[in-house]
Image (cartoon, rainbow, N blue to C red; front, side):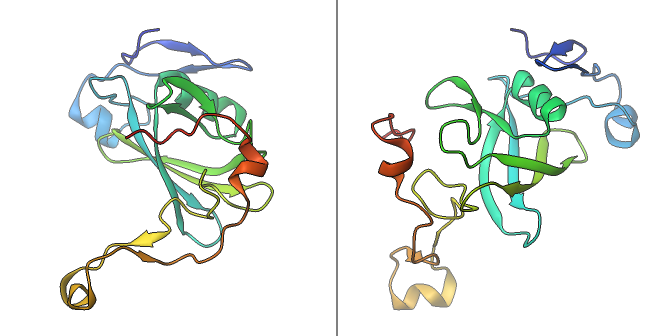
Length: 171
């Protein structure tokens, strides 16, 4: 699969045309989707809850994941650790229905606003958000430098949901 812009992507139920990047004006002010993928063929995607605005996760999309998200209305990502296309919720049932998709000014980052099926959790560890801990900064560091949990209860038990599926976290 190629990941350069200017190609039609077959994404299952439909195709998505990704425009070639031809000028700064076209990229910043134009109406064509001309994403800039990095050297690994990926684009960063920030995913937030459509109602609360809470950041749920940060992921990556290749051209296929981007096209499938656009055509299906459900979030697809590229798993860097497993090196596979990943339909969020296919295993867990915690499908992310896309309410809105935006692309940033230079088209190298995507923002998804989603509704999450089931418990509303998006983290494979069982928490609602993948950002369930905060890092103390500035004056907060005087009270210690350990991570602080901002979510105290998991929304689901990962063993019940994923069983013996391999954990995507890599050391």
